[in-house]
Image (cartoon, helix red, strand yellow):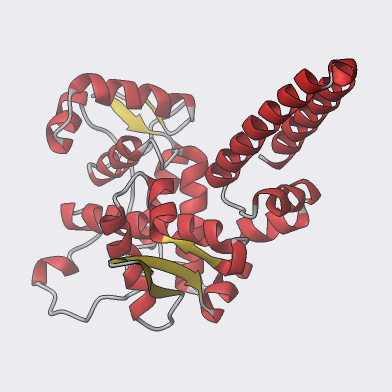
Length: 301
């Protein structure tokens, strides 16, 4: 693959989708190359390489990101396998695919959901794309969209359209407090995408407050416009899996399937022990059900 010099991005093209939908669709595109749940270093390397014109030495990247050289080399190896980087004269360099992805990320700067109160921006914030401040804004934008995207998919088919904060936080590896900080942004400003509810439960003298999130009407409209959601709704396998697990979120769906399979296996073994004569029939039927579930998961994901 040939190294590419990153140039100034063109003016973002117009389209029917709003800025938040465009940002979430861009996130989906990034996630197809970089697993955002495990590949944040790869994303940071992509941004750092683009900021440096498309090519840099490994030592420079490690120093700039404050990570060990070994971690940088491991992430670059994975990025080469995905066609994002290649070997340049000085070190790793962006390919055309990597440079195009970086330019798309730059076009997304400023297109995010402006939920924070307007602040007076320092003069340095108006510099051309490619500055360290722009790289930080890129990562901050994608971080916000990443957690919103996770919440949207988890709430898409949730019972009563509502989930506790702890369940949403477990999908991202964040603490409930951190996840609450990210999601409150979308519950406080217009258009309000999420609704935040605090419920109090009592058990004698003990009181416990629990936070729940659900989609608002605007949130449902946004969800229905996402290409990933519309593709899932067109898939019979995805609809059936969502009906079983009550979610469209892959991680949450697989967790719930594992619980169902574990409970079903225990029940089948117990039934076989109680009725030895029916054991082959019971275990065979359960094995068939597990195989059908595996096929369903494969067809969905």
